[in-house]
Length: 360
Ligand SMILES: *Cc1c(COP(=O)(O)O)cnc(C)c1O
Image 1 (cartoon, rainbow, N blue to C red):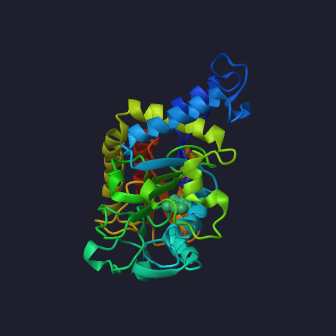
Image 2 (image 1 turned 90 degrees about the vertical axis):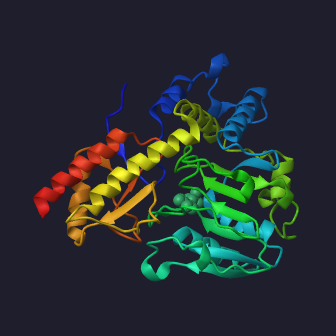
Image 3 (image 1 turned 90 degrees about the horizontal axis):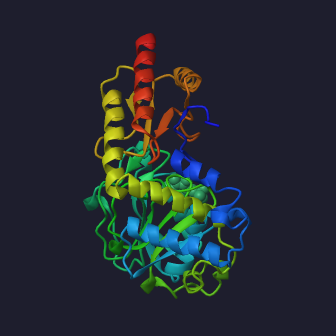
């Protein structure tokens, strides 16, 4: 049975490659002739261990993760990392946080419970419509780490450079991981909730420089201690088995598409097309400023809230779904994750032009 053809622009959970879903369906009841679903397997079974190990290896290959770094498959969402990071890395000292959106703001607020947070940049004054330049970052000498969010899912901005800092870089890549090559060796810690660009909700990927292990504060829960999690290879308790398996299928698809290099090429092309329409429109206005714009989440609006609502409704009637902006920002947001085909962007653009003709 084929599903109804829609283009799903949801910000997360979001579109997954159809081929990965089809493989999951084919293997749903009986995984490789073992008589059970991956959902039903013991996480300690050799069969699941093989899925776990190969998924980790595929991710390591996809992002060229060096041997100095460990990959963890955890739960608790990106949000749990807002606390795990300071509990493990702050050591009661100070850290620099760049606040460029909602999630980095939340992370900074959470970290304050565990030590000193210095705001290295804050773009809230202009509605988080841009990314600060390197020279603007206020870096402190004694920072245990520098924290930033690579792609601001809600506001639609994306860092176009990797900050230069003395302190280890800690980065929330929830909404742009696997969309471009990343030099992992430059980071102390990268993390991402899987439900934007990798897998279903329930899995959080952490990629950690092992040299940063063993600094957790004494009250850090066992399940949040990076050292403990590395030691147990993410299996201190039951890991999110099904999501790890789904990630493996998504990584197979990604490899067929030319890996992260292939994804980067497509992502730039998708977003460029859409921003071009926005910049040449008399009706729509892009939220993010040129030079700071996200290729993953394109945020825009008309001058009129009712018109925005009509736009979203009309789009849905055509199978262009989940274009409503986040409740914080209003307006529209088109999330263009890895699995969004160019046809989806073309269909959106055709609709946008028609809507503009009818409303200007
Ligand atoms: C969605 C998102 C989060 C929150 O993720 P949860 O898994 O729901 O905790 C954090 N950071 C970014 C950049 C996000 O896009």
